[in-house]
Length: 545
Image 1 (cartoon, rainbow, N blue to C red):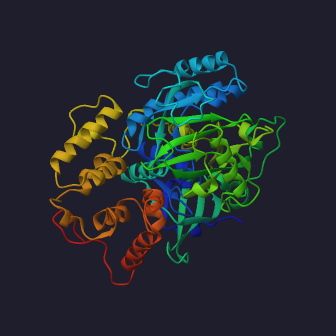
Image 2: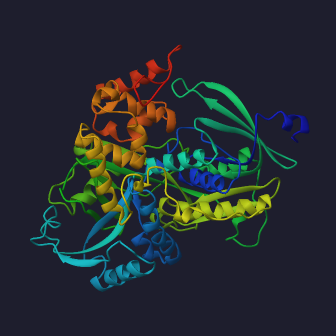
Image 3: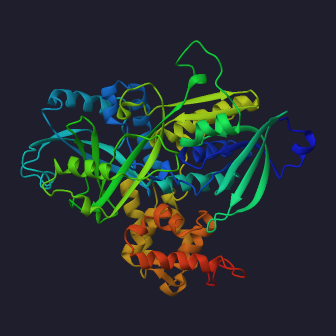
């Protein structure tokens, strides 16, 4: 059905680009476009990073195993992004060394050495150390492992707080003028002369009831729906595949949904390296230091045939990860050890690979002008989100008739500007240590544990959080251990947090450390704040109502 000019003129908001999807690719594209001066609206049906983007293995990595599948272009792109990303947000991303025990029955040592040499040299490294080999016997890195493992290789990649990365990109987009609308589902998209008319329905975070509808007129639409991208394109936008003689044509692009599950167990080892294990099925899993007291183990690769939002960890996956890890660790990992588990659906670009683990993690951007300008993101991985966003912004710029300069390669994310407190940025790890030291001297009353958590979560934005704060009394009530009202108000004001899950499992991982009663206390506080007549905020010298 066509859209009349009267309907178009009645839109609540007019913009250049509507981005649908609040995962890492959606917020990355919105950030890039807004930074180029485009008027951007982003809507997400749930909380930011509610799905795939908070359920990753939380790595900034080139993908060592992808070399075996001949994905040299993807690995090169990802390796080139590692250090750039690590510099952009040293509070939520940092270098991590990986230990790969050698299993001669899987791959010969010369093959691994060759792969690691490629990994070291496919892209420029400025501060990440190269790979090496070690004797595990008598070595601290070998102590947690079964005695059968005697030789290992060590190489560099990086770690990231994935959900916070999404939120920081959304914050940056908003501060550059974008309108960010979480819990706002795109119900309708109709092509019209000069663009699209969208109907966006906002839902209450606590009741899930629809609250109001926003009509947005956009010159172009970016479909960054992740696992929902194909549904959004075909069913909501009404764009069907066009005829083509090439199976590789973007017109035939479609998604293959692959579920990845993870388990978290009490800490298995005390050092700061991670492990990468090769399974007898030739798959690999990681065992990563996590939240000080835990070890994160994952991931699986399982075909997902259900709805994208209907995802959970199956008992068979838990057993698989436990058995896989127990093959290497001296201390067996049992299903009863699992204190938390999570799963996400990866929207992978279907390349007709047989095994789910072999499906490419590369991406494809499909841009068309019919029935009105649109761009769809197919596939992708966390590490390449900035590059994907940059390329997408270029394509959207062409659709809008104006190319604008790229800018994100040298930009920092909110909180990443540590020179707000230190003299000069030298190395991400050293800079973060110096920042924490100076903040500690400035606020000597601040508990060491809370200071470390806040600086890791907020980076230099902690200075805004502490503006005008001179003592613990200024932090407000302690709603749960080390979670004060000042932080809760900050998360509600600046990071779109509305529910206990938003705060305890995405803006932080405090839920992993709290009892059910403590988690409920946070939910009760939020419920009380949403009661009629309540205002957001409390009085102290640095933050007003």
